[in-house]
Image 1 (cartoon, helix red, strand yellow):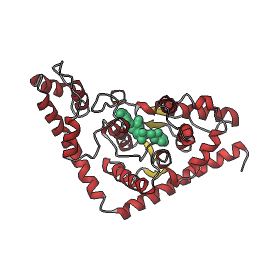
Image 2: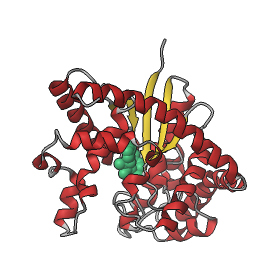
Image 3: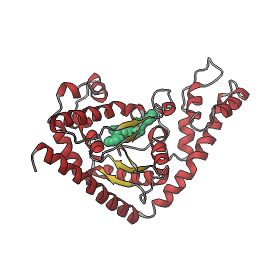
Image 4: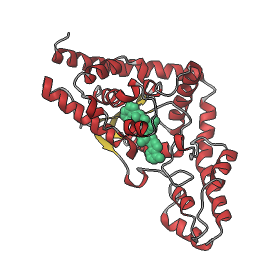
Length: 316
Ligand code: TYM
């Protein structure tokens, strides 16, 4: 049986947090290890450029992300790990999509509407963001895109754009499906809202013991109940409901003990990841080789698809 194709990516725009991991990255690793997919894992640096506009920071975040990808178990031997900016077909196809897309349609994107509601100055790159993401996915005839809930609308834009292109220029693109795990579709942060860098409510994925302690101690608790809901909802990522029921029943109202248990559990989960990452960071040359190899593999596939697109629109 031929393998299905999977692609996902993350923006190197700050430190990864456990919301990224449980919402998307864990599934990326598991689906890769199932052996059923031909996998592409991208570092979406051109998407990050909308907010990271400093060369030193961009380089640091990008290197950090490759180490993070490898430390959680993405495997460059079986999967293609690459940087978006290394494969120019992505931005080229995004332009082609811009020409068949209307402004009112892009104005319905959640990210655009949020920025507008906050009266932010919106770059053209932020406005066109969904078209670059559609190109990322459609270039590789992708079947499955593992992501968190907040990316669902982007996958819908991708499907709409594929359909619009196919209707205009003939059958060219496959329609991808999002892969969203219901229980972790929106991982909550320390204040109970969605965990997000912009809300400053994150627990970093590679946090030190001190960082874990600081984050857990800052979890907002409601003193009226016996169970600290925000602590429990993060704890749920690490233990089964039965295990947690026993712990929380035994410690009703003892928020300090419950938080300390969560710190222990988070540290036990993060420590091996931290150590693996530390080990990998000693060999920067190997990282460079992985990226060069990934770029070449992704480019071969993407360029072939772009050539078909060019034929279909009549520019080749
Ligand atoms: P980014 O970098 O914002 O987020 C990376 C992934 O983490 C998920 N995520 C969450 N999941 C559950 N709960 C949370 N609190 C949480 N916070 C973040 C996101 O849903 C996402 O899956 N546009 C993408 C990057 C991208 C991409 C692509 C993804 C560019 N091209 C092509 C897939 C395919 C983004 O901004 O992700």
